[in-house]
Image (tube, rainbow, N blue to C red; front, side, top):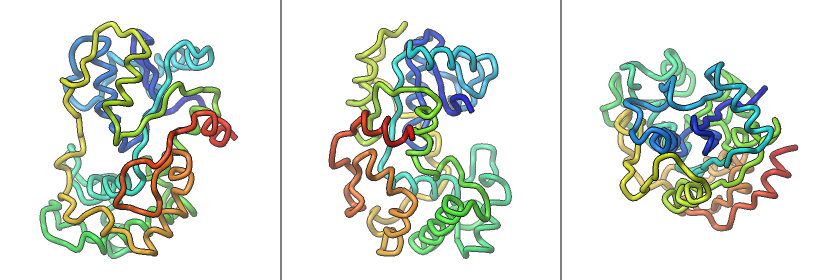
Length: 272
């Protein structure tokens, strides 16, 4: 299986397991900048050079050898499951993607037909009942994750613990896992632990939110989208994310973690 979703700087200073919807665009651009002194011109996910990626055949032996020998500082970043699934809904389901089309072609028409979801019209700009549509989307997300129907789960709403665990199961070990909600502190600790070709001043690094502007703005506080049934579904599909990364399941309004991430626990439980 290897190490899907893994990126590494060409200087081999940093190795990152991508978790979608968790500041991955900003992290990738920081890694690129730390080697080249400039940002990639475009979406870092499209970069085919300047950064080693498992998706690039020539990069795979370098990444695999590096992970096996643990020569490079390995890290990842996670996010509150409540805000992450909401971001996936507004970006991937309601939004028009940068290619000018809906995400995954016939996915949205299928959701409109089978789950009664509204997405704000053809271009995502019309008013619609965001709360009702999101809760129907959450049913769909649960169906994909629990029963792989009507399709396999998408990387943007499959559990973070699943992404994180593939790196461990295949022989990797994390040196740091930090929260998107404390990004500057967490990424700062990562950068302080290594020597990069180009110094990185985090206070001057822009946030590369490639999904911003794709879909409608969230019209309500996070907690308004989650009633008792929605919270039950969240626990059903993301209970390991809440437990492993110490987020507050009982209060969707609290995006901040309620405990410290235990790397030993993560390697033990997600490496099974």
